[in-house]
Image (cartoon, rainbow over all chains, first blue to last red; front, side):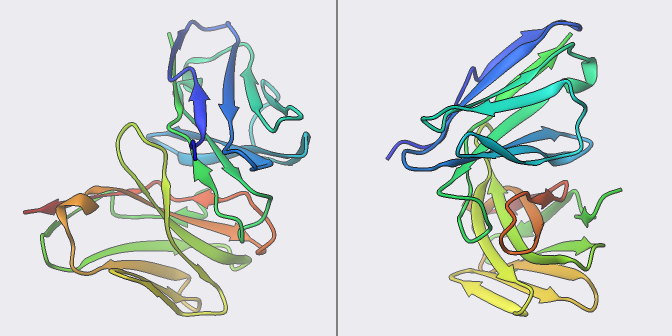
Length: 114
Length: 113
């Protein structure tokens, strides 16, 4: 069974640009969550989608947005990039929301903003 | 304000000995706790969890202890193996039906052969 895949794996952008990251969950998983990992802050929750609806949102500015498609694939978008957005962005999928359902993480997309 | 704290950024342990990783939390509303392990260039993988109604959960070499009054949990690995060398993240969630996890900053464990 294929795991969570994230594309691209690495990305370099400049300040002010926008970026779209993609996440394909494990087959059959309908819940997708996004996290940002930085050395100073650790992993921080961005948002969670289930059945194409945003279920939860973390404490991030409106420049961070996401969506989920009918096949459960998810994208996140960051507009007007800032240097501080440089981070590893991790996607996790689970069968459904709730801690009874184990979250499986993808390898992440390493975003560097110059 | 960090609600889940892992105060030791790194830990070195001899192979075969016990590794103890610690985690403190500030919000008493957390009711489910998890440990994840992360190797470089890979996403975190789930290791073990514990509900707030328990004070201990064991899975093979891994045991998690929860002390609610102290708002403290710890992960014990016995015996430690070189393959356990990784970054360990403690995580917590509010209410068992809620997915978003609040993570600590991680502890890098090095098991020396």
